[in-house]
Image 1 (spheres, rainbow, N blue to C red):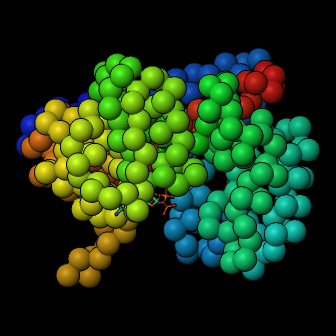
Image 2: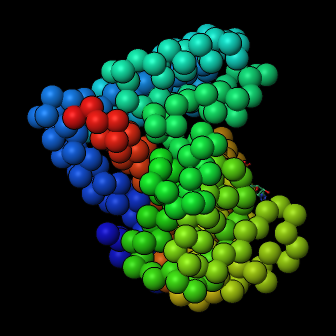
Amino acid sequence: MSEGPAPGGATVLNGREIARAVRESIAQRVAAIRRRGGAVRLDAILAAPEDSAAALYAQSQGRACAEVGIDYRLHRLDAGATFDDLAGRVLLLNSDESVTGVMAHLPLPEGVDAYRVQRLIAPEKDVEGVNPANIGNIVYGRSSLAPCTAVAAVAMIETAGQDLRGRVCVVVGASNIVGKPIAVLLMRQDATVVSTNKFTPALPSLTRRADVLVSAAGVPGLITADMVKPGAVVVDVGTTRVTDHAGATRTVGDVAFDEVSRVAGWISPVPGGVGPVTVAMLLRNAVDAAERRGVC
Ligand code: NAD
């Protein structure tokens, strides 16, 4: 499932390939649900301008759903929508039996607290795994819908074929939906996990001990070769849009890819790493949610 050696020697963890394999199995599951007379339906709420990154993402999500047979419905709300508007729509979708998955695209309009909206999404339809009940269940190791990016990061590590028991895993970044869930999922595999954030002193002295290093900080170039243990698995969750001197924009990760790939054993690129796997995991959560609700 990897792309072979990077120029510097590390094996590249190819997110597009991993995602393709996940999507193939999802398509088969959706087809089986349809044969039993059921359907997988994902309803997404978007309250962002037409030309925003969120709107573009929603479009590509719709295409990804269509490819595997998931019925994707986008609910466009005005960019000035209030909490009550969003809450009303979520509650409507929660109570609609034909809807098996619900999500709200971020960012929400200014002044609307994402947490308050996410906690309203019925946990069993929460395909992004952002409802506090689902976040809590990953601590308990209960079968649950987990945050897609966290699951994707762990899937990348598993692709590297690592047995995580006892291994030192350092997670850079500790947000509620990305860094913290990644740390918890690794803890569940009996790894020795160090969670770090922007206040962590002497970060390189910690990362250099990592058998597995996951960076989810959103700081381009944060992880340099001298911060990486030789042979380590390095997974880059960061995605930042940058503009170069010529005015061209591109997406970069947290890891200085070329230099780190000379030291690491495995490395995930940006783009083409965690991103595509995250989308695949969203589709997988959508199918899990439908199967658990017994729509088929
Ligand atoms: P966030 O801003 O909510 O959290 C960032 C975390 O990184 C915080 O805990 C902060 O303390 C830490 N941090 C910041 N600078 C640091 C530094 N210099 N050293 C150590 N820690 C530092 O961001 P988020 O929502 O968790 O997203 C993190 C990154 O992951 C972003 O680049 C985001 O775009 C990306 N992301 C990618 C995907 C994907 O599918 N690939 C999905 C979600 C988020």
